Amino acid sequence: MDSGQDAIEAFQKALLQAQGDSESNHIQNDILDGDLDSHLVFSGSVSSVTSNSNQSNSLSRFKKKAPLPSWALFMMGLIVLPIATGVISAVLVESGNISNEYWANYGLNDGQVTIQDETYNVHEFDLGWRFDAEYPSEGYWDLVVEGIVGNNGGYSDATINGDGDGPHTRFDSFEIDGDTWYKMDMNHCSLGLDRCGNIFIKFDGNTVDVAGESMEAPIYVGYLSEAFEGTGAVTEFLGFVIWPISIIGGIIWGYKTDRKPFAYGVMTAGCLTLLPFVGLFLLLILFGF
Image 1 (cartoon, rainbow, N blue to C red):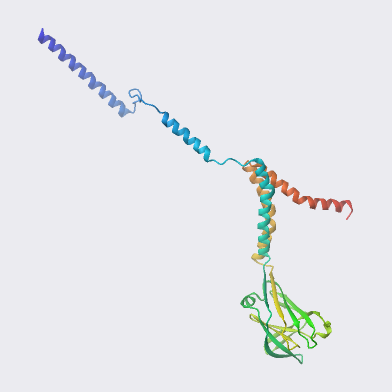
Image 2 (cartoon, helix red, strand yellow):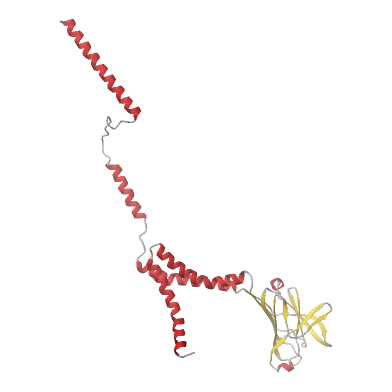
């Protein structure tokens, strides 16, 4: 009996071991086949993951800026955009209307010159290196001489103007010793134009020579130039067209970005700007002008 019982127990142990090895092999095969879900069960809580996700979403919503209220968007279109456009327009127009000014109020005696059998006293004025680079400019320019230029002691001023082609004068120019002298227009004389005599001018680099009958040097020589070509004209043009560009662009941007109050503000500003012109036009029609 004992030997039989021992044989039965040994058989049962071998059977249990064989079943364990078979189950282990089956699990390993499932792992290789990617099918663990039916045999492995995860325990524990995932509430921490969910909590972190909710917290992250809350922080994300907190970081987003709240949209501006409708009244703020409307005021930006009504006031802020027109003011910004006006400032930019003024800067462009002013930079396009380029003007350079040079002047001197101290002249050096530079001898005499004889023009049409008349002797004139010459005084030299240094207007600086920028004048030499600018004259004749690509634009309009004027040069003014003020002081006592005649022998009668009368205060007077004379001008000469021109453009990029050189001086414009209704008088003849005179070539003397290789230099060109231009007669200036007398604008004012305290004793009368017929008593102030003549004033001539010669351009030489950054200096001008002024010839008059008086021994005294003119008290002021000034030069003003204003460009009308090149980048100056382009920037000045942009200063005007920026208005319709900003208005149309502001309206489109307001609608495209779902900020319609901003677009309404821009349209209101445009209507307020045009209102005086419309009123003037209606008055002209009403009174038959």
